[in-house]
Length: 123
Image (cartoon, rainbow, N blue to C red):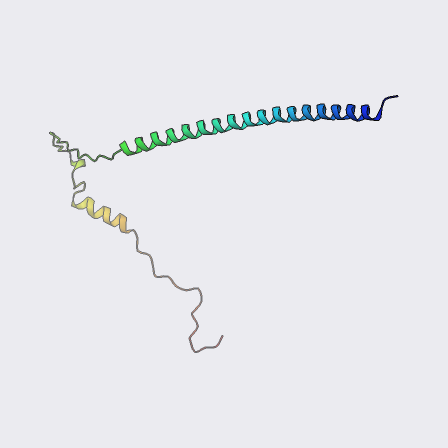
């Protein structure tokens, strides 16, 4: 039969080995997490740098844009003599006919359907 001291020593060795394996596993997981965090931070920094570069380029392009006003004058060497292009399109009789057509027939004054009551009459 094993001795009690042997059992205690065996349990202590088993517990120590189990604790060492657990600590090794935890350290390995911590290293993996630290690597992932570092990679994520590098990715965020790269994206921020890319966005900053794009914003800087946009600001440069906006600063280069400038509104320029130019006055363009063109001289025409032809004179149009057709009556349709002049100020006067109608002769005197045509102008009177056009004014009559624009004025239209005069409408008669409107008559109310029923008489308006006097102010002193009670409703």
